[in-house]
Image 1: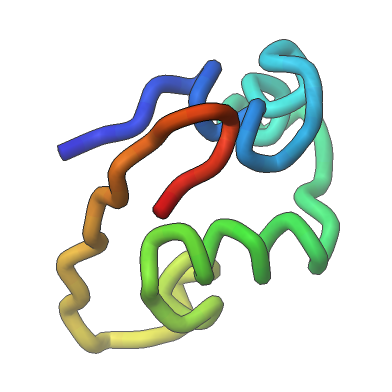
Image 2: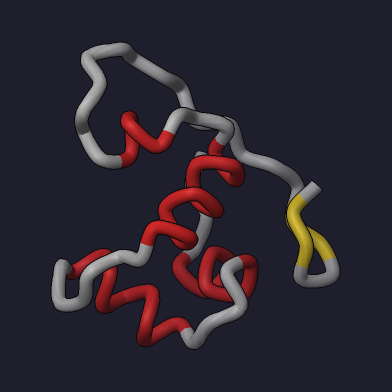
Length: 69
C-alpha cells in the first residue's frame, strides 16, 4: 500500500512540489523529514537511507483530516 505524494506532503506540512523534489533527488532531504517519514512508515531511518540489510514492510496508516492515525 502506498501513500500519494499529496498525502505525504500534507503529513510533512509542505507543498507537494517540495516533496516531489526530494523523491526526484533534486533537493537534499533534511534529517527531520527523514525522521518523520521513518515514524510514518514505522521503520528505522537506516532503512530509508538504505543503510540496513533488513527487510521491513512499511505499514500504511489511515489518513484523515490531515493526520495519519
